Length: 153
Image (cartoon, rainbow, N blue to C red):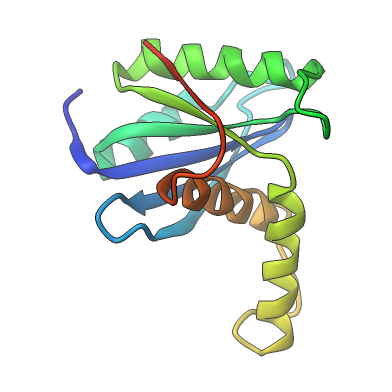
């Protein structure tokens, strides 16, 4: 599936939800897009929703947050994210990259608090708001060239 090399999608993969952001490699900007809930109790990604988003945005690459322990070592969720990366690559035939996502959720929550405090965001947050904002933080980090990266075929 050929897409625009300038458009990228970022993912914050979790056990219940996947936060998604879209970014532009030319401007270096990213924006929280949406959050998808896993399609069933076994934690399978919502492939129908993912396919719709990939078809709409036609990205040239995908970036998945890699949840590492504070010391940079793997943890149980790291393998789940790597499996999701492999599935994305196989499903969409688009390059998939990993981005160290340590502290992305903390940064996302701080941004949401700031937005609420200055009135640009409502007082109530939906469950997935922090997930899509974390995906934005992950993608911004990738676009800025921060952190270790790996690529899946």
